[in-house]
Image (cartoon, rainbow, N blue to C red; front, side, top):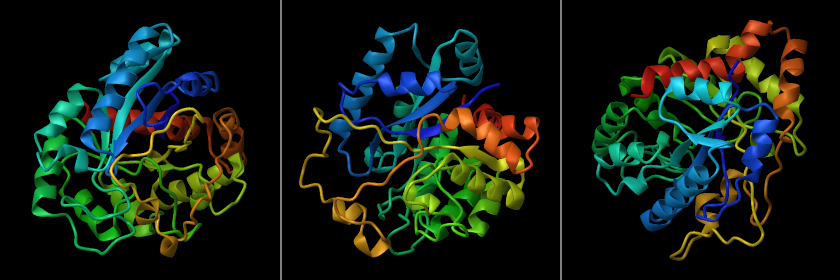
Length: 320
């Protein structure tokens, strides 16, 4: 059995402590996708983070392993090592060059968003004006498909996400997004988006953030309820987990340089509050999820699909 967490954030700093990933592994996670940069991060910061993270992983081969294929994930689990892949939250780090997708793939990026909350020259953010996937966006999409990078529509505008899913030659995922029907936040996804994702063979991975679960103090039961909604609507083969837990370190400043404005990226008009951070389900959610999903009527084989087999299938269909 492979437990797959589709999205987690460490500090965007080359010296970030990987101890939280060790805790995730102890909680039962076999593979985790960790963010190495977003649209608000300049390429210099993204590359510094990738270099630092790669060095940390290489320095602890008995604990962590950067993987590029499904067989490597399975082998890492058998060896008792946490398999790791990187993800980008937005296409701006590609610098308008679709060929950069292959460069990032060679550095360990296995998954990529096209926009983060706001519009860029590739795609629409979920908190911005709807335009659709741009001409450059279609080129970036093909480049991501060709490079074996999982296409991720989290944080993406609804119209744009539907166009991405229609045009992609590979399965598309939402690595950390929840049903809008259960929590009406602009970052969450509609039934139409969930069903379109399933039609690509993709997976909607439920986030563990309070904002998107609709609970100020989210519990494992909240996560299970959102998973069950996706499974009931689109089929259990299209539900997964991406807890999106954001780990911080008080001694590391990972603020993007160059006049970073958090109010732009997380606008109050969309329900965010300046200076108020979300709360997250605890790490032990991974140990408690099977029981909570059983309470909702899922069979053991279905739970295995949700916790990892579904994302494993997407990776097998996508990674080179």
